[in-house]
Image (cartoon, rainbow, N blue to C red; front, side, top):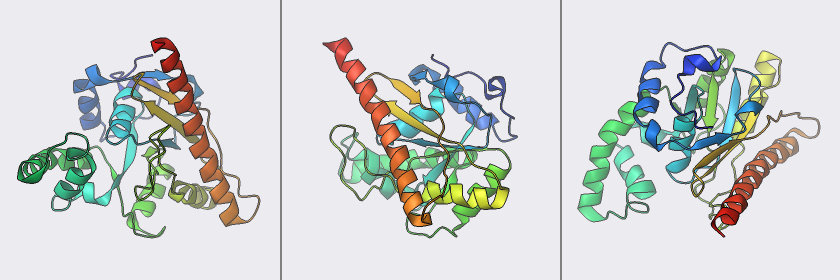
Length: 250
């Protein structure tokens, strides 16, 4: 299924008033979208959390382009700040991926963020402070959006940890599980959490069946276990796509 430029209004979910820029961006970039497998696993229009692997810039870009759902992504706060974004983008993408260095690399990063910051703000991104607590504005905004029936897209890999060579993934941080707990306490219902794996080699985005956070044991233990469960689901889907891709190339 290559569903990248399917209009959001055709997917059965409630169209939000700020989706025009989102739809336009997806339409313009649709030639670069990936195939989608497992879309039938999505059983409700929202609210829900979608948890995906990062793969540098590939994970966020391809999930938004390829999956015809109106996502509101969690974005590192530096990427929404015109002053902080150039250095962050240079360290995270321009230098390691494009291999641009020195003053030219920083200049290119600065020019690129003039566009990216405006776009990320326009599509309704949620600013997340990596060093803030669970009471930050990002969590309050996320909870409000979930109550409005919106779908949040989260890439919870811990950038300070080493990358696994088999999956190009880092271990997940459990902030999204905290959000599940807050939503359950506030709304009185469980929040679907969909694992997503993005695989660049096969140009595929895989969507798994939803999981639900049930804090039955000690709360901290239950949160860590659920975080690990979602991480393992994403990891296994990625490895399965890797195996299938290797078999095709053999």
